[in-house]
Length: 610
Image (cartoon, rainbow, N blue to C red):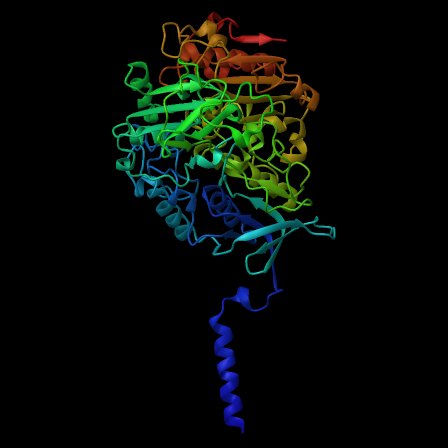
């Protein structure tokens, strides 16, 4: 009798071992200090910092590998993020100013250039790079976990309320801190009459031959719209792009999310009158209807005076502009394609854990604090592209070369809040401060990429100072509680890189300021130092001058913009900076720079006092 029983027990044990641990109990729960949701670049970047600080964490990913977004997008498989391999420098930090794809690590060779040598890499190279990043750093990633519901824990504890994540199998994961790095996956859609006749960017054919001799209307004027247009220009009979706003060019706005030159060939064919073009109009005011003469074609019309008529009866012939023989979109189209970008997936959060929609970007992004914690959702932080509401259309926080630094800033916030580790600081004597500042403005990649958003904080202590790198500027009123450092009676300096406010023709004459005595009129990216005798308040931040990253200081110093982005000229850069520091520190620094040109010849042209 024993032998069959033992055999049955052995079979049961073997059967149980065939299932992953997640299947051991339908109601089993896994607890982690940190749950990182999503194994995209932001999630993996946070994983590196958590691993480096030896924290207990897990990265949960619904797909079978990291960076799965890039297996699908960009649809035409060419990234527009710069992979500049040769800079003439061997300085790792400087080179990251021109490497927009690699994540931060302590490995000098763990860069995208190991996978691709192209300036604009193929999209397939990025998941390969992320897989290499995971493997070589030994990050803890669990694949095949599709989280469908997130709720806050009902019971508060001394460690906080925590969050419960439920996956597709009903398995719960609980965590003390939730780090959401899911990116933007849901296509942005607009409902209008005939929107069911529109094809989505996420599912259109990518073979140009599919568009041979077809007229195509694209809704949108962002990079996905122009990327789509560019891929079919050589096959389509005409391509029109339609959206409410005129096209915005990245080289004019300095915002990398606007149209990049690598995608703008249609601007040539439009302005040189070769059948393609751009049209402005409201997306909600358009109707797409089947053409009466050819059911395969669609007609676009404007609903500017329907006055609430039954939209189900709208046809091409009864629309108010049908008889306008100069209407831009009067010719029918073979295809209408929606390329309106993506939005954050709020649906997986219940009411207890759902961050609010942001006030910018048409509510596509979650609203977060200046330190990237969800508004109204304590201990839930948003990372990566989804956190772009903090600097939407003003800096690079929605892109890898920007959010790799904001993720590091979030990790430093976590280290203080949950582990009592203050923001890293370097103690310098006042005699070292100028050379350290010059080193940072000429090498640092964080403030360079996240211009106007992350800045260096210098806490003045009399004969010495404490130097903190890459602090979120909008969180300056909460500086002490977020960094663990206190302000002294000597005040603080803030180093920021920023563009000028003088709107000029980006390629026209007079686009740059070259005279160092007029550095405050610089247009291009340049360093600016702000001096405060006390921390700005929340009210100060709200009422700062339009376009300024910070409130009005006691004194401000602009370093003249430089064509080579090298701020090391003794006359144009170093000596004006020294005079500004002397003013703020009430100290004569000439003894430390005795080998320089005569300091008394340098007036205070670039130091503005308030």
